[in-house]
Image 1 (cartoon, rainbow, N blue to C red):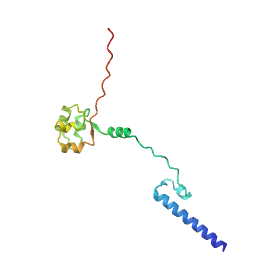
Image 2 (spheres, helix red, strand yellow):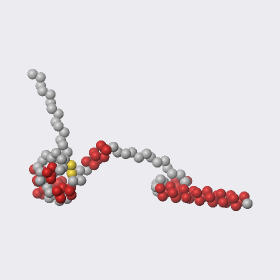
Image 3 (cartoon, rainbow, N blue to C red):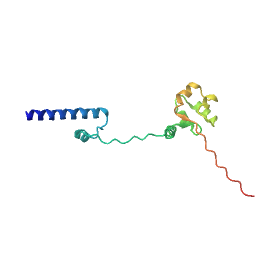
Image 4 (cartoon, rainbow, N blue to C red):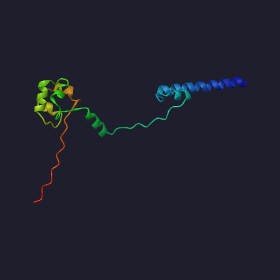
Length: 136
């Protein structure tokens, strides 16, 4: 009788272990690179996620965009819908306050702007520091 109870207890523990390991794996808490953690029935301690601030996200987003005020003709030509003629018109129309100036100044049509709006930016030059006047 004792051996039956012991076998039953071992079977229940093994079943619980199998179910809990399966749910941990299904939940993605144990990385595939840690099979020893799965075998031991342990989930590695999770690291807290670091969230980027809106300013950091905007800076990272703007980093990959092409600046209309400094881009070369070849860089502009690489944009979808922008050829040699549009690239020359964009350069001739500088400086731009916003990227929407391309449409407002009638440099490119709205349909072309819609194709490139996520790939461009119009950065403003930082104002030059004025030198203090020399004493008289």
